[in-house]
Image (tube, rainbow, N blue to C red):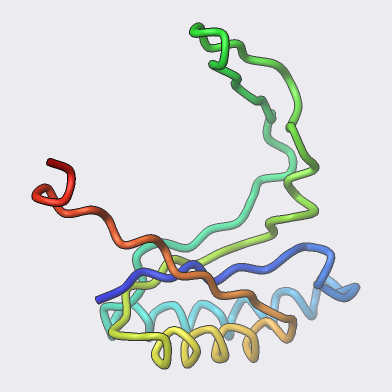
Length: 121
């Protein structure tokens, strides 16, 4: 199996009414339950825009924490799902279903295949 990140950028989301978002969330909840039943969903989530944001830089050898994001994260990542599927075709299937349920674009990225222990020596 291969892990894929399916995500959307908040800038891709058209203006929504509260009622419209509630209706989409109902559809998405059903889809997420289907993904869990199919054993492809690893994790899904969205950013809490009201929560504190901080950055960490350890380039000096000591972690230095600063308030605020390095980049406007909410403009780059709105929400995401991590799936574990057989191949790209399956990743496209689930990404398409998510895009239809949300009614806005999704981007799909494959995670790097972890190096096996024998490859590191």
